[in-house]
Image (tube, rainbow, N blue to C red):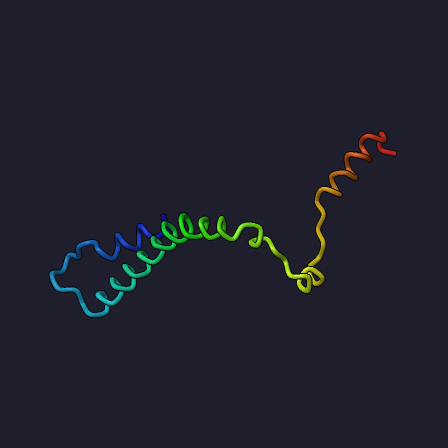
Length: 92
């Protein structure tokens, strides 16, 4: 979606018959940027990345132990359990 206006702007006809050099450069950058966004969205993120993640399998989610010690431990389910137990006790 993001690449469509860029490509459209780059290839749209201009009222002048001969574009100025600076405008031509901007057209080329617009087309290049739009094309790269399109390739990234269609090829890389929708086809290549899921295929590679499927091939790698559980190694996608491997967290090195050194990094695991530095990162904070977040446990959302424990907080939910504590809230549900407090509600089951009648709020005592």
